[in-house]
Length: 70
Image (cartoon, rainbow, N blue to C red):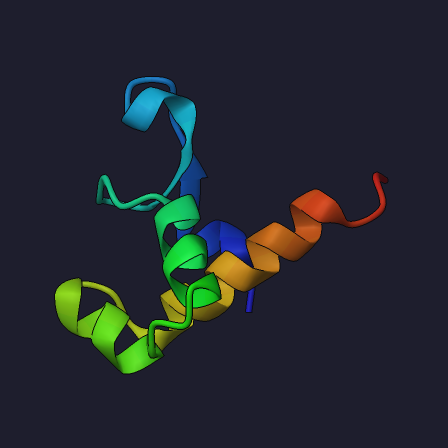
């Protein structure tokens, strides 16, 4: 999976924070909720436009941002 297919950063959307394409849902929101222990199913139920692939993309995005700079 290529996280760039599902995540974008646009200055005119959510002050440039990374969001899932076509939404105003931030990657940060998803990662914080998962980190707090919210089950994936519950998170997705609250955001019916998103899929398990969006969760994986969020994790890959975080790994890319935190990983070694190339």
